[in-house]
Structure formats: C-alpha cells, structure tokens
Image (tube, rainbow, N blue to C red; front, side, top):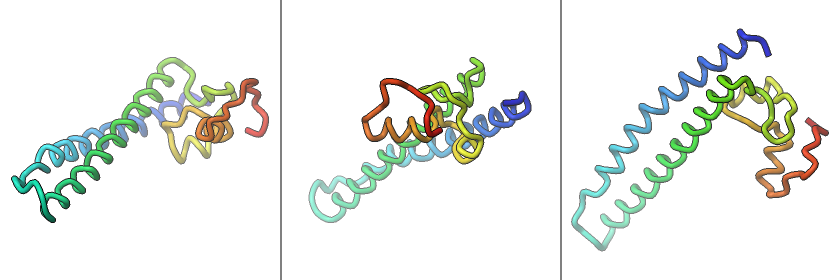
Length: 126
C-alpha cells in the first residue's frame, strides 16, 4: 500500500471518528434525558424503557465502532494497516474501501464470527 493510500485512509478514519464523537455525545445526552417520567407502570414507562434500550444499544454500538477506528489508526501508526490480523495476508482494497476500520480479511472475519478460527492461519481463499 502506498503512502498516499495510507494517508487517505487515515483521513477517512479520523473523519469517521470525529463524526462519531458528535453523534455519541448526542446519544449520551438522550440517554441522560430518557428518564423523565415518574410513572413506574403503564404505557409511558414501557415507552420510556424501550427508548432507553434503543439509545443504550446505539451508544454501545458507537463505542465499539470508535474503538475499531482507533485500533485502525494505531495500526496505521504501527505500519500494519491493511494486513489481516488473523492470517497476515493483505486485506483487499475493496474491503478497506467499504469499511476502513476492518482488521481481518473476509475469510478470517467469517471464521471469527462462526467461532471456528483456523489454527493454521493459512492465507487460502483470501
């Protein structure tokens, strides 16, 4: 990967992190404000709990994405960005374009999600 490509991904990731910081602040404020009713039963309370659960889920998701972006930025600094952390192969450019924060090639990601990570770490099929 060229220095220009790395710089481009760094800018994309930094932009995503900045945008995420703004939306995370908004969702955090919504979580704080979501406890407004003193009604502990009934439709109002059920609606409040549902809103809280959605806001908490969104906030947790944003937190995980921010961590992935920071990890990708640290990999750029460390010179390992674009290499799969599972097998060491190059992550295809199309995958990085779609999601610059990824750290696994598609095959390793699928193995990770299915819980059957290969012990060999071979680069076949990537």
